[in-house]
Structure formats: C-alpha cells, structure tokens
Amino acid sequence: MESFGILLISISYLAFAVLMIASSWRINEKGDQPGWACLIPIYNAIVFLRVIGKPWWWLLIMIFVPVVNIVFAVWAINLLSMSFGKGVGFTLGLIFLPFIFYPILGLGSAQYQGPAGLK
Image (cartoon, rainbow, N blue to C red):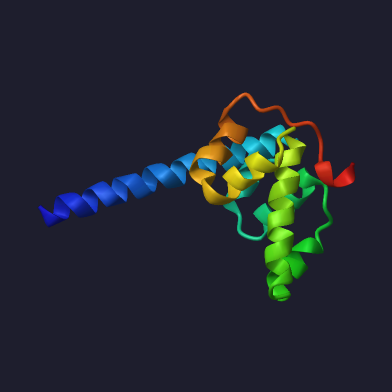
C-alpha cells in the first residue's frame, strides 16, 4: 500500500511539472521569445525579464541582494500580470496559487499586450 502512495505522489509531481513547463513555454511564446528557454536555468530568467521589459541586470539583483530580491521578484510577477492586461488580484494569484494562474496566462486565452516594464 505504501508503494501505491509513492507512485501516486510521483505521478502528481510529474503532472504538476509538465503543467508548469507547458505554461512557461506558452508564456514565453506569447511574449515573442523562444518557448524552449523555460528549460534552461538562468537563461529562462533572462527571457522572463525580456517578456516583462526589464534589463538583464535585474537578475543580478535578484540573485545577490538579500531582501531586495524579494521585492524585485514580486515586482517582476506584477509586471508579468500587467503585460497580459491583468491587475493586482491576478498578481496575488500568481504568487499564492501559481499552479492555477500560470496556466491561465500560458494555456488560456490571455493575450500578451507587450512588456509592462516599458510602459
């Protein structure tokens, strides 16, 4: 019975991973970036910053500056939400329920409206 539980957890984890990869892939494509970039560590963050209209050096701040990195990460998620014409409520959804809201952006009918960081 224990192995059934482990199998169920493994399948659930795999399904979650596939859903999030597919969502990220489509978000990149909607943002006129290569979808496969979501699979490459660090490069995926650079592509994400392109989608939201922020410079590459934001990645350095997010990696090396404690506490400020949290502020920049929330700001970046808000800019992603705004890039798809969504508001603060959607940003909160992306932060607290990403397994629901990222698929809405990537796999749903949400339309990319250009990088919000440039507006």
